[in-house]
Length: 227
Image (cartoon, rainbow, N blue to C red; front, side, top):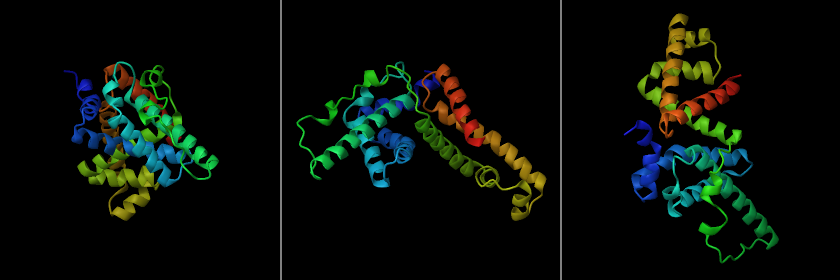
């Protein structure tokens, strides 16, 4: 079996079948992107957490994942489609409460039939650069954590140079090493981080073609982020 058929889509199917380990792995991996996107859309921290909870409840309890098909769309697109829908429904409920004097409206419609249609949501490869940037930020965060676990000295140099934007001379002085050593750590750390980021993308891509396309797209976002 291809490695692209044994990564996130295996977890998706297992989570759709109610397997707790797969559910936990998916939440840990992708909840931060939903929360960050919701916050970037203007939601309060509490509301963003509520949206994230609703997104994953919808995915797991309403059997969205069991109806998802890697051949019909990307996992990132699935997560975006559900998140957009939940945020819209959240705004509608908030507006309804205001119209009702603060009381939540009584509805006879179950949440599973509130207008969300998986097939319609994934009919096109819709992209939202704001969501994709938050998704990329989460991939980078996981890759950086893995780099820290595997190569603490590389992570230390990368974090100071790329994230804190400090000079290599300053870093060398603080670490008590030669500037050339810092330069080597940054160079090797970049290469290692790039490989770890590729592993993260490979972890949810469903085919070699999607893998390469995702790398190109996310790399373009990363270039703009660093520019």
